[in-house]
Length: 338
Image (tube, rainbow, N blue to C red; front, side, top):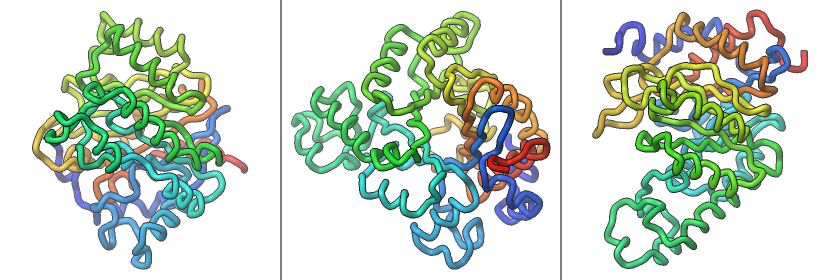
């Protein structure tokens, strides 16, 4: 169980911890030969936008909040694209509202990684083009779709993020595969097919079943990722579940390394029927964040760019921990440009 006092103390206590760490995360860090960007996996969660939690009182619109966020951190992960295909106009607005060197990482749509999507979230014209037998279903999988509709989903996703890609503000597409995506030849082929669809668009892969790194499969998994130069998303996640990957340092691409922090709330991690935010309602303490400092430094010896993203986006927990780990890393290194 989560120690409520230490790891879920509430936004007020988390906010008090920010005072000594207010500026370290604002700019990318130079760590060895690597640029380290630190941020969170959301800037719009309702628990985060609530009054007095993270944003100032005058940040009342989506534009205000992104402008404020982008002056606190140099990177953000967009998770809304997992649920709905991105619109090109939205990407254009994000460009206008963020500094020139700001970076967006974008989570792939659910149907791009073998996960279900609610039918109502698909564009109307795609819904109307579905076979009659799918129209009464609440959710659909890519495997059930006609090939031309699946192709169109990938095409629209890429079109939606094109403003970010062409401007240089796109960090990577995150292909987050589900817990039932096992270490088989078919799964590895699926990753390669995704790479082919993405073309020259940068991406990274997050795996969510521990068997990818068990004694039988670990070497094969690492070899596959390294041979294909596919960036692996390192994770800090709740331990003790079937989807719990070990917190390993593994750089498999010469271009990018990614670390995502999901919190360590084991009892809710795979629980059904609860609000999604309850899985991530966990505030790391300094010693837990400190475990990753040598790992990130080791990764910086191998990758020119590292993205560190706090996915424990309940209230101000993610923003607090992002500032804290930035401070730990910055204590011995200069900021980029200094």
